[in-house]
Length: 89
Image (tube, rainbow, N blue to C red; front, side, top):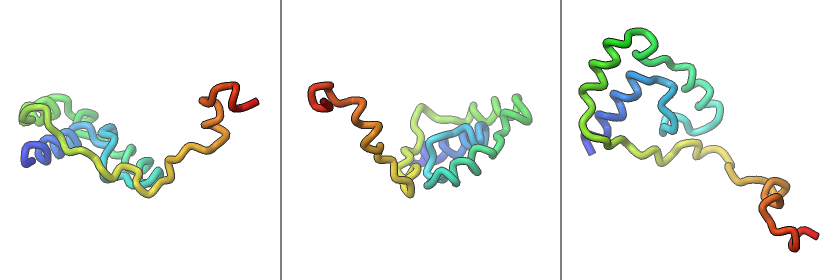
């Protein structure tokens, strides 16, 4: 668990707003603000490489609350496109 938290923080430092999905964005408004954050990679590539060297393994935190304040249910007009033609006639 500690490695996942550490790796996630390191990736966030390096890639900033490009690290999506994340629990820091609960709505589309939050997502737009978050995407404007720049990471180290845009300022100093060498420092970004040094930071990425600290990553342990492949584990990162699983974002369980990404866009949780949004209604992501597709509307009926969109879903009807996936129904067989025999149901729609």
